[in-house]
Amino acid sequence: MEDVMQKKKPIQSVNPTSNEVQKEYTPMPDQKVEELLRKADGTYKEWRQTSYKERATLLREIGSLMRERKEELGRLCSISMGKILKESIDEVMLCASILDYYADYGEEFLQDEPVTTPIGRAFISYEPIGVILSIQPWNFPYYQVIRSAAPHIMAGNTYVLKHASVVFPCAEAIEQLFKDAGAPEGLFTNLFISGKKANECITNKYIKGITFTGSEEAGESIAATAGKVVKKTVLELGGSDPLIILEDADLDKAVELAAMERLSNAGQVCTSPKRIIVMESVAKEFTDKAKAIYENIKIGDPLDEDTQLGPVSSLKALETILKQVEDTVKEGATLVYGGEKLNSPGAFMKPAILMDIKPGMVAYSEEIFGPVLCIYPVKDIQEAIKIANDTKYGLGASILTKDEEKGIEIARQIESGMVFINNVTTSSPELPFGGTKNSGYGRELAKEGIKEFVNHKLIRISSLEAMY
Image (cartoon, rainbow, N blue to C red):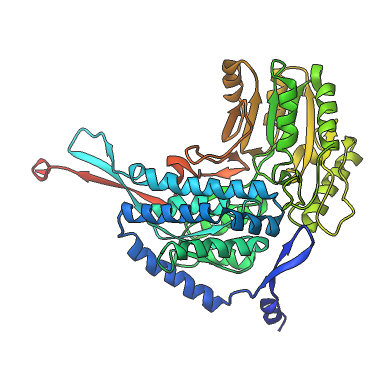
């Protein structure tokens, strides 16, 4: 009886600005989920036969619709998870560029690739594999979905999404875009279910691959379940990205970049520079300038065009961030500024600045997914590299310096999937995105992303006469 009641409990999308329920969803029963997966598999058998031109036309139309509806989609994103409106609209526009990118280059990326062989000839044929299950978080409601849906659909697969419950309204909007663009039923499908049920779907016979972005713990569970049934996974499990600032860097620009980037999306970005590594000679000046910036930040309604920092995604998320800050301070770190909840029903906080963070402290070893600037003064470059690599994560990293060759030399020593010199880690359609170590494996975007869920089939042709 308890299980039956649990199934009837609605899934809520809560506006973090007001802490009010935005919309409720009845979890799909198992029978409905099975029906949708069967439909996605049936659509795959037809979609894989379509031409690249047909697929590209669909992607371009979806991109066009996203541009037309950028304001509407942006507002929905801001209301659902708290991102300031300008950033929400920028996210929509990035998605449109990703759709156009794969429409333009998808066919080229998937062309047969010749293999040099001494006898006869051979090539690799890149062919779709079926229904891809995508399990995505709330921090980029559109981008997290489109960056995987665009390439995999272009490759001839179909796509089933289990989005984070707080952004189910955004998931609905994406599926509507596909419908309005003329996509066949079953090409893009939402599953309004719990995370536990999504994990159970991995073993379903219709699912052929799983792409996941989220927590390390959830990623481990998904990989374990998929491994038991021999299914391919791509995992992006967050990070604790270092930003190394060399002495020759422009300090004012470095401070502004680091401080403001930690406020982008309220600090809820996997590739946000979470550990600022700065030379001891300028550490105090850097910290004072960062504090001055945070003291003047406008915090408020994400729909207000003057707002620079909106709420984090939920009160639960806010509690986690504040506790991480509190625990780190108890362990001996210095709270330079902020780190407290604002007097509001929403999930608002003053951005925090932490210093004197040592190994073993919470902020040193855990990813803080919120507007918290952690500053690490170091004596020299070697100490900077040591601290940068002293983490279980390895998603992105950044280096600020006027000496590009020195930057490249340091970049080669950083244990991460991506390193950006003279910029923070950003996303663009042509740049492969992904990490190493506990940040996961596999790549999204670029040529590498479209080849994650295709069969790399070898076809070899020899002379029949040569066999005798």
